[in-house]
Length: 381
Image (cartoon, rainbow, N blue to C red):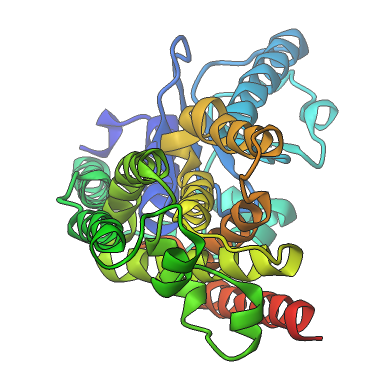
């Protein structure tokens, strides 16, 4: 029964099983890449692993494969906004005439593999994946081993698909809708119990940001100002932006994390605003820019799924809105920048499901505390 499966098919399946089920790599779908498997893990030292079953019989063929691999990796780097991308290629069907050392470098490691056990002599592979040998010792053989490895890979892929489905599944944005409702209620109350939404005294009465009052102890204004708007256009533009961006981020982060990020973004936007301005200001734009920062952090960590969106939509949207703020009178660019940075840091602190480690979260909270203390120092020095 064991002879039904060739040696290099056996090696391919074992490598695929190890990198998918043990190391958390995911397949990359490439058009025209026949007899080779591409796997990615953006959190690994080797972000790309290739398993090649093409027969490479001389240096000329190997040279062409190296060139083609570099071109594909360049595209993946561009799509995923990765500055560096080490590649590890396993060739399970390489001829003896290939001088493999000519094609090895620090960024692209090439391995001629006849049997998994041979990897014990490969220092580069063992240093990066010290458990690759121990995780490829199986009692099963032949068809039994083939069935086991295939089932394990399918189970792992199913789990990964469920995780992606859970994260990207559209959910009802109750928190976002609640914030928008509060904005409209506050706006209406300013007309019922004040003069109007352009009147400075009314704005201050309903919690607008004013540096002298904040320095005098009215810290609640750092948050309440995000629910106060100046004029109908200001209210409608911010509400629409919040609905589009907030609905997405609430779905990605979950309600509690999203609420934390929104409040912290609003707070950081307010702090940065009064570092540079003495005038009365209000609006949710600082918090909305925080959500854009949160989306930037999320998109980068899930860039395998959102790489093109990150590069073609999210980053240009942030840059465009920041630039526009410099040319429109009355726009609080400082609040936008403060909120943007706050949103990025706050999202790292609360963490992304299935992505952010405890170490990264702790660092996020430390950076967030330092950032807010620095802004506070700049205000009260």
